[in-house]
Image 1: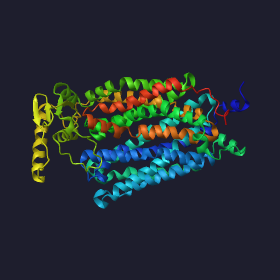
Image 2 (image 1 turned 60 degrees about the horizontal axis):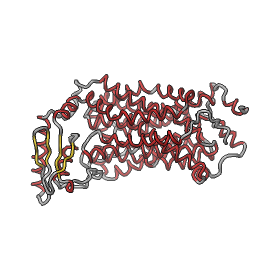
Image 3 (image 1 turned 90 degrees about the vertical axis):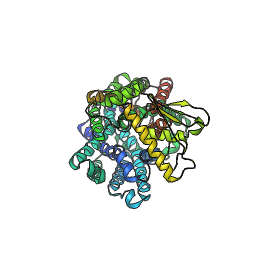
Image 4 (image 1 turned 180 degrees about the vertical axis):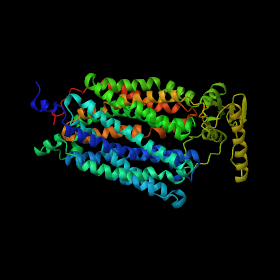
Length: 555
């Protein structure tokens, strides 16, 4: 028998409540816009703030700085989740938006490496960490706030609007970037125009604060506070009691970790793969990604609403399973559509590095301070710098590494014992020989935009986007339904932000490091495939369906 409380919650949503939820979602769009500006401009950020490094290391270091914001998100979840459960959802919202908007705006004024040296990247990383802390408190509050305003049988549909905000924020950032690029031209944009989207966040900050000042407190929290039932120690209740901690762990491994890697693979990694591995020009790649976002975004609502009928778990698990089964063929198809000359060259003329394994070291060099001297490392560094996918073959002990491109074979060299001038000469000769043979074998230095199958690329990106909507659309409702009201903000925020901040946020850096080490540009996909596979298995075995839970019944 349904209680009076449950019946009240199930009533249709009033116009005032819809307005409040819209305001919450719109403010969240602005926050995600701020956060994703950095990701969209990673290549330019690398040149502006990490210009003291070589191009490959600068890009990886820029991705690491991007990842710094994700790494601190769980700490933001703890700080702001605790505040949200103790003093309320509304005031926590105000704090997070001010921190987020201010730290983003400052990036627009920050001098680059050429102006203030190493202080530039240090300050940039500090600002990224402030953004991450703020965002760590944002999502749990938004999801909790909307769910606690929603009719019981519509939680999936209403909270799915929050899920669209991340994609809409990314789309808005791409739109502002493309508009500024078009207005100023590529040269001025790369020189100083990239600052404009960051400075524009000042206006967005003002609008967001105005919106959030007009919001009402969550009725569930207001009722609980009036009755004196708020938690005095949300952290110890959430993580110090096994009955709650167990659910937190299951939510992380069986839900959010897989959801996160599918999300980032489908949006960010796909963009990086297009521009870095396939050498598609940035503006065109952004346009194709933006179109796929427009097509795919309504599916957040579709799958959120569907989860109210058939359950959250089946949709999320199917999205993870499809990612595991299709990522390799889908990204291979993306190569053929976006850079057919590269795909053809790879099929006809494989590149093989033959070397003594003992000479080869890990090719991840984020600081740019490692000087590769062995013939193996030098050969792999040259190929990685040219974004050439290659295979590894074992050579005789003590042998000099060779690069085989089709029928041509080029011996590498060791710089041990050589003077700086001799090393420079050898390096130039070796790079020229490799570049000439790659050209002869049909390997392009960049994608020919006249031969890009734009329709196919957009279709593939849209498919990846639909997988994102499957795992992400129902997740907010499911997380809210897993935890009691008194510790909901804290409890759901931590697994969400460890999943999305650590497992998801580290995906681009981890994937490109795997590629740099193994030589195969598709091997980075093993990271999201393994994590999504883990979530599918754990989720299917241990996660219970939550769509019929009365979130007011276990205060």
